[in-house]
Length: 312
Image (tube, rainbow, N blue to C red; front, side, top):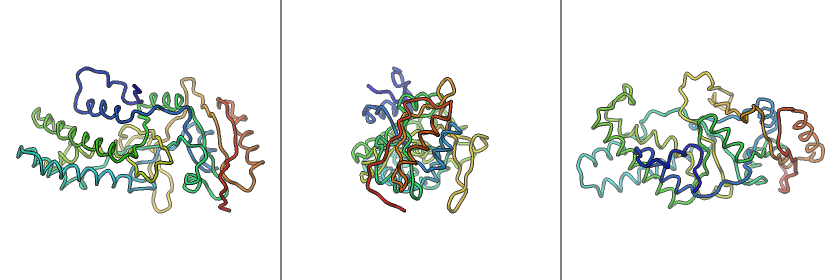
């Protein structure tokens, strides 16, 4: 059984609601990890990743596709409504109603993600993430990314595209949030809610799980991407490692996720040069750039995209 980064503690015999959720999650995320994962980026992205030995993990509220979170939110609301109609305990039904009514009001937490694909030469990715007339898919071994995630106490997990698996996960999340809220109420645990209005506590508990796990639920139409994500732990807003960059219409927070092995080196396994009018000399310059950096190890195989695409 594959235990993904962030879920190694699943072999415990006794588990909290959160741990039991991750046990079930591990059974849903049952696919074997690939040998190499690819991050699609621009010229500036390639230079920055190699020179800085870090990759930008974007705050989840500032991702290109905000419908990802809306998709998970809709699934959660449907699950809650089904439970309201079937539950017999009055106080439990009231908790579910509070979740449904106030879910949109919950406080958001700072979680950042960085995306990878199992596919190294995909037209949709060149269109989305390649710059005009160029783009690159940087390949890292799964083991290298796993070790980097472990060093930062982050998770690396595949995205879910299957609707049945998504509904199962959401059902587990709602059940876990209910159990945790009931246990907190019984034990009079209030510190985790700060000064939040008590009526929002059930929704806040559910929202904390959604903020983490909604990030791996994607619409089936994106299945060809075969996406994996590194997901950070919640990051305090005052954390000095939280950086900010210029976006098209706003300032975007991000986390510079270190791409270093235990010895402090960067391991690039492969780079695919995306569609470009200057393929031969682009391949040469990328190969020369990688070999000029003493801290970059790996096979560093530089190959050409075979996608017949022109954006110049």
